[in-house]
Structure formats: structure tokens, C-alpha cells
Image 1 (tube, rainbow, N blue to C red):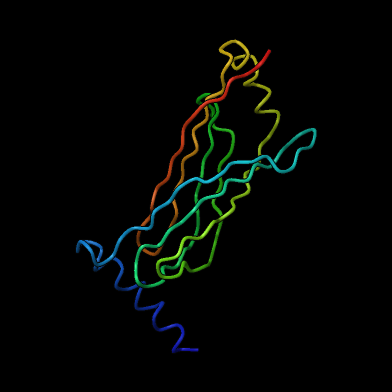
Image 2: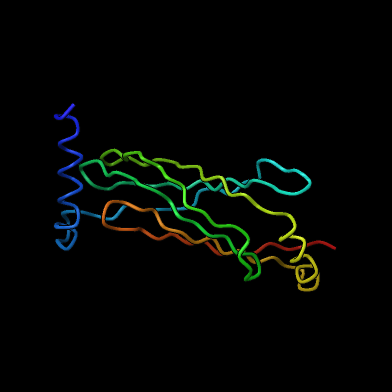
Length: 147
């Protein structure tokens, strides 16, 4: 058991020490692959955000948690912190699904403005938390609204 934990412990301790040396430790690359609506009820819905987390290093990196926030037309509608407790293998890319709860009462308050401007702007921000560092991600965009 100790033999398997030792590389992970050493990686955790050496990651911040080597992060200032170019080419020794590289930050993971984060991209937003997909956002989809999963469950819908009369009062709430669940969207699933799929992140791709790529580890360019020759050693595994422990992933502690993912923080996120979603705003529509400048109004915050969802946020959270999802614990992961997983490790991303050396030179691997891993998709991670994050369920985001949406309250339809909040969304209904945005409807008059969205109908007036005929658009809904979204801003998804967050960070993937690793030991000693956080790697941010963000995606902004908009969709048209029909009357």
C-alpha cells in the first residue's frame, strides 16, 4: 500500500517546487466539451457540463475538486463545488461530467429580458483544483430566443 501511495505523495510535494521551472511541470489543459440538459421537472432542471482535463506531464496528477459558476444575462443561476478524489494519469485526457442544478424560478425571472433582447448570454466559469494550484476555465456565448 505504501509503495503505491509514495509516487502520489512525491508528486504532490514536488509539483509546486517544480512549477517555476519551464518544461518540468506543466499545468493541465482544460476545455469544455459539452453542455447538455439532462433532467427537467416543473421547478428545476439539471444540466451536465463535460470538461476535458488533459495531463501533459509524465506523472499522474491528483484532482481534488471542481468549482463552477453559471450566469445567464449577467445573473448568477448556479454554482457549486464538486469533490473528485481522482487521479489523472500521465499524458492522459479524462472527460469529467459535472451536474449543474438549475432553478426554473430564477430562469423565469430572466424571461422578460431575454424576450426583449431576443438573446440569452451565458458565462460558465470555474477552476479545477489540484494540490497547491487551481487551473481556471471559462466559456462565454449566447443563443437566440424565439418569441
